[in-house]
Image (cartoon, rainbow, N blue to C red):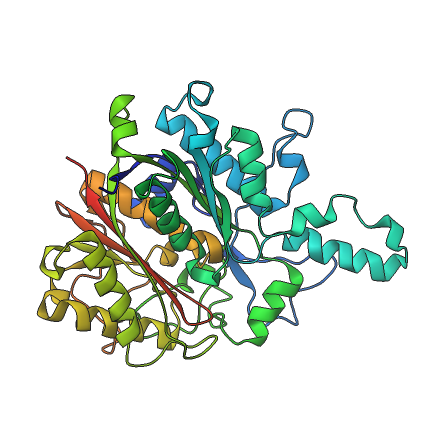
Length: 417
């Protein structure tokens, strides 16, 4: 019989707060973390179509003399490590008393160590000195640098994998971590998502893709507006989120506090387009249906959906089509919100941060507002979306994530008794 999997710890680094408590208080207030990008060093912003992002201004990596691990990785992995340390402390795990072989790490990463990558490439061409490339360049820019450094820092000798599926990366990391526990490969898993790619080249690339919001430079806090008629593209963000997953048996044995149970997961591909979702929303609906089947949950039992909801014209509409296809008339009674309205699209971290927000909602019987939902788009409006916090006893929730490359992932969470 497959092991039941529960969430026992959480940690977060986000544009509206570092730490779960500051993040959650800001989320319930409806605080926006979207601000103007002043410049990329000597590179002015004038040539960029978009000039705003969900930046974490207060993040400071630890001093290398105090933390040998953070000094060896890029900004995104430093954030992942900080979120993980909070999550482990929150879980109450005493790692010295646990079997290292039964603790694993699963990371979801979209872009990886782009800050060092861009910096070293620029330096190489400017200096014409290949021998001056940073000696830690390769292990820093590899996508598994976050999962690797976390394993080193916490002594995890179980499964250690990195999943990179763009915007759905950390949903799959959490889902695959759950599978590791279900099938007996581990008792505990660190499931983390992280990205910090507000860099000159990556940001220029998204601008060239014409995926980013460009209308709200004078009022950045208005730019991320999922499901609203005035949306014009997503807002890039950065951050990290970590969840500690355990088998229920292991958590019960050590008398751990349990936040929620992970009961379902599904992964599909639309095999349609590298950037644009298929307009009928049927594959998105199929993914949600498969996740519910995995959870042995009926659509009528679902109370809340934390939507992928990037604030793009097509994406939001397609997701609502998928919700209507799965839930029918019940789609009009389910609560729905968009964490990206608060912090922007954090790419590989998005699914983990959304899962933390969903877990907090299950525990606190309230969901945070969807910012800037002031003029609902008739093509993707639902009664359960609100610009205000909504209080309701919640039992079953979905977390959606849909990534570039036609990649879909959905988690199902259940309130723990």
